[in-house]
Amino acid sequence: MNPDQLHFAASHEWVSDGNPATVGISHFAQDQLGDVVFVELPKVGTALAAGDPFGSVESVKTVSDVYAPITGRVAAVNEALVSTPELVNSSPYDEGWLIKIESTGDLAAELGALQDRATYESTAAH
Image 1 (cartoon, rainbow, N blue to C red):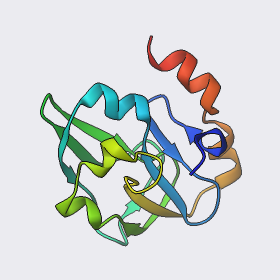
Image 2 (cartoon, rainbow, N blue to C red):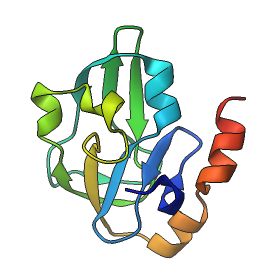
Image 3 (cartoon, one colour):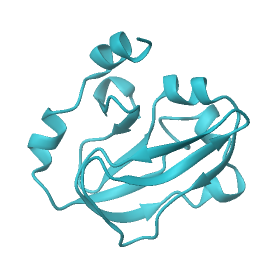
Image 4 (cartoon, rainbow, N blue to C red):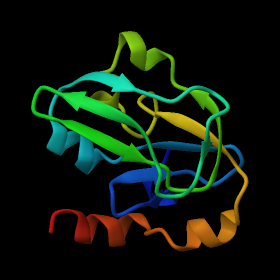
């Protein structure tokens, strides 16, 4: 996915347009984490509100929670991360996606409350 077309949360998750929307963590976040060794994801069908933690990403340095950027129900999880969690590092915007969420909220308003790439990247390091 082209990061210029994604929406970013201050907590370092990104979400695509569309329904279901794809969710992952930013290049900045995976870089700060270091080598990802384990990813914990929710079950398909789990209901999430925007801001809810839905799993965690464990690296050689730390374990970080990941948060839903929009309200909805988990439509899919990236099963490839079970055996290859390092995809989060090598391909955070493509093969390293985490979940897909089928929106059940006001998708346009929730996406509008998130940051574009330039805004996110200008504030992420601070």
